[in-house]
Image (cartoon, one colour):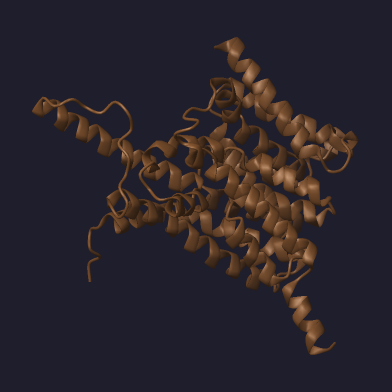
Length: 250
Length: 118
């Protein structure tokens, strides 16, 4: 049976290729959480409640190293600060939705849900502008909001729920699998490999490369940084250098 | 072990549950921030926007580098470490393919090769 072509299923289809990377990433989150001392239910709880891969993995890492509560929360927050950009960018499209729907969108707002949905909203907007110009009516100058119960919401649920479901299933698979694998296989090494895979595509210019290099150097020298604050201090140093370099290099 | 103890073990420690909830709330608030504030605050100030752009490279480098580079030993010991070799190879794969799956697969295979075969 062919799946009907609805905005929801369009969103699902667009998201499927991303799962090739997301599933092993989620499995690593499950495996390493149990290794670090989370119970299987807590490993799942982490994926359901937080639902942010990089922050989850960093928190798991710090729990394993005996980091303090405050430092672990701060580190996860610094890693997730990038979501403010997505929130600001998608906000104008959501202004007609109820508070509860806005909250649901926010909970599901991942890197890929953001990228796919805003791309689609911008396309729709461009088409409407062309139509408006063709008929001689005045085109809207602000982003055209999606409507409650409309295509925009259905498409968002398609691109956002697909990674959510895959992430939860992958975490369960990781929890189950992780308990049967001997330590000397070094499965925890999959964790830095995920970060390498996330890091490399962000190096899109000299300022970004400098931000990464400084951050990496600071964290290495960070034996001197107390309380496991290495990641936070390194990130602040890297962001500062990147922003300054951007200003200098234009 | 009693059934009650076993049930508590399965549930996990209260400290980790508190951690999960607090990180979850913080993450949600960051995602909700401008969606909630829209109408009151419409734009991220340009300076903050510039800084936010460099959060991903800085954060991901801080997470990846210490796991593949060790500065405890000599330079020679560092660059022949199996994790360093596997990490470098994985970075090359990430650059060529931009695929998380390919990066993990090649990196793990390289680690096992250097660790068990070489």
